[in-house]
Image 1 (cartoon, rainbow, N blue to C red):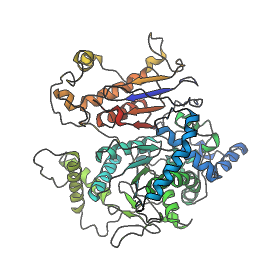
Image 2: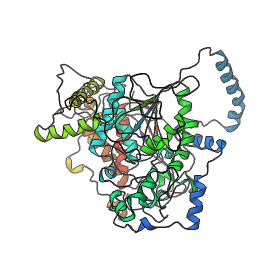
Image 3: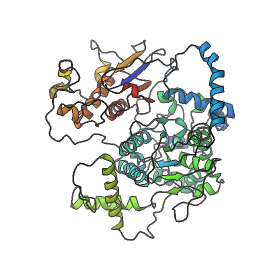
Image 4: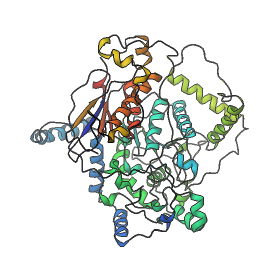
Length: 577
């Protein structure tokens, strides 16, 4: 890893780069574990681990709430990661502060009409590898599976069909949730929207149970014991040790947290208490401004938000669930009180929100899709004939019609409600293909005509032999010119040009036109990530433009680096000429 004082900044613009300001030096990085979350959890002895007095004290301290002032400051500190830093001297900022306050007061008085609060959309992330395998997941950073991607894409199409347009997104720092936001933004044709990644939206930490198979633990310890951990509001599973490979303190994405903020285990109440400040001082504030907020997170953190919004009691919260792939929408009055669901809308007990689709239909549609594909590959129920050029919005709505048509073939669905475990910790998530295949077999021309062909000729005409292999072992060898992890002591800025688009391949002028990456452009972005990983780079923040090709390049590059959690600042100032 980098030294304590090093700092890295990854910029992903189009062709020209603006000068950017630097953040303050990060805190000392914690040692990484070499164990991957997907590795086999052969040791079950951790299930019987009892906390030491020191660990128990840490847990007790964690469960104590911060004061409102501390909570508010904590949220503000996290938000600064997504802001372009103001380099104005402190004395100037202090002088201007009274002017800003006066201007704000005048504007408030002059505003006769109150701003109508926006909506809150809650969406559980797509199905993950461990959820599918029946393993306790918690803070382990596992990826999405194919059905998880389909779930999130379907949710995006439901939002389009109902006319919901998010203004801002919140998600956790876990890969399965972050990649779910990438998928839904792509479906909404809105990758430029700001996305805030907060540890407060991480799934509940299952302590020593993390990585273990739920059925096996139930057989060994008794189903009653396991269900008590899952269903009770205050019961905590056995805590993990700090030497556990899944201990979050070994992950640099949490280096901004204090030791007592990093849980060794959590009850549902602990999960609620850490999510509450983000609602009070972040999400709620945005909704009050009139913004529609989409929260893509995990079962227990979403239930935590619902508990706060609807003031659900300890007993009743156990009956509240969040099925995957179906947005749950809240609307508010001028006092930020949740409005009751309109007559005929689908809701659930103890809540004021509404489902945009009947729970259970999507699961059955996906099941039927697999049956069709086994006999007729590529089919998905009723095919809608499309003539002429179809944009992303139209494609999404037509796909939704196909899915819903497929679901209706199952029957009238009047009694088809699926049984959902309200305490399921499943984290659904998705691998996404964000690239358009619309360029077909077009010949790859050098690049956009407005830029120098000679300068990038080698980049766009490299032979297959020049491709970067995913093997990163060379970073540990004595190779000239390779900066190993831990060698760089200076701040680093890296520039990356976006991958190829269909416009590039056809030799078209692009500018602010917004084509996605072509398939070979996706490989360009992945190769950039492999190169950076080969040379041992680690980053603290990513800057990119508002254009899809640059944002997708950032996504694929970060995915190769396993850094999907990094804050990403999107600015129009980095758009192409």
